[in-house]
Image 1 (cartoon, rainbow, N blue to C red):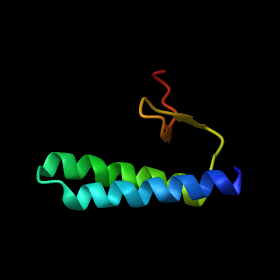
Image 2 (cartoon, rainbow, N blue to C red):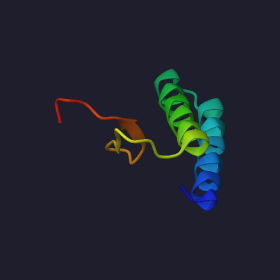
Image 3 (cartoon, rainbow, N blue to C red):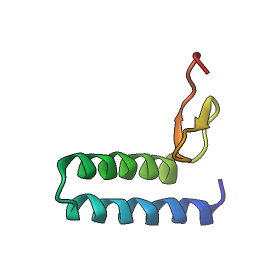
Image 4 (cartoon, rainbow, N blue to C red):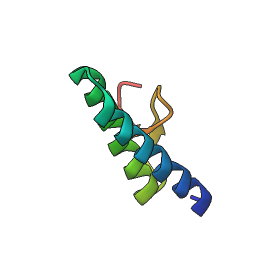
Length: 66
């Protein structure tokens, strides 16, 4: 993964964390926290074999049911 991609995902993680902290609804805050974790993982680890993009365009484990 290109360094520029890693920077992008790190920035998105920071934005999602801000949204999580500013959310008044606990369910909305939880979603933003989960997105933060996914973006951070992508920024730190990059692409790994055996992973695909989920419906949000984030990295997720490939499931045998797909």
